[in-house]
Image (cartoon, rainbow, N blue to C red; front, top):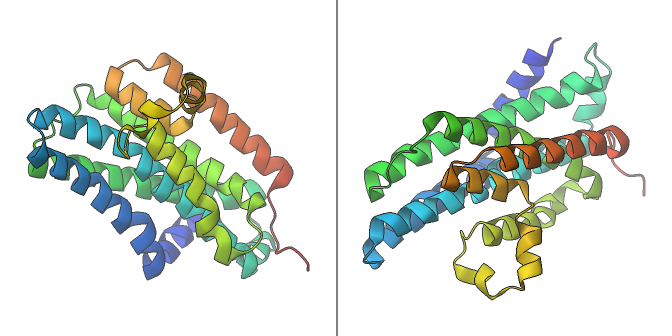
Length: 241
């Protein structure tokens, strides 16, 4: 059994789970398309506002489809002892998790691509000026957020609490990138500086400004932090009561 098999398993289980599809695909797609479309019809400078809104909603796609998706999936498979059974095969721990993270990142990139085309057709949002940078940051952000989601399962006591436990990440990501309106403008400046360090904010900043150095460094730091956290705290079995 290879990592490719775990990739296929993660993908198949994902598309068979209707509840997960609703929460981690349909919800961010509706937000990422609906909000820019709404701005397109409400504001005079509609194209610019819709573009900024969509760029901000990339943080929502990453926090839901990548982070929350993998956290919920791995928590459920841990409690169902699926992960424990996988460890009894010839797969290494790294391959098991890498397959799930890769599958989740692929799904996230696909969702972002669909939304990018959809908002262009529906709301007139222009395609990215630098497609290569856009693709690279979305791919890197998807991998990093999926890795962090896997690490975050250590803080989730039971699978049924996974969705609720991920909500703070979703809310902070949306506020930091401006996807939820001008909430950030009323926050203290020091808090804004903290929010700028989030991996989702790094992706959005790179897409908005075209500058890749600082966002890439932030993503690299978060990626390493996620791998280290998985190494020390990831749980393969449910907590014993």
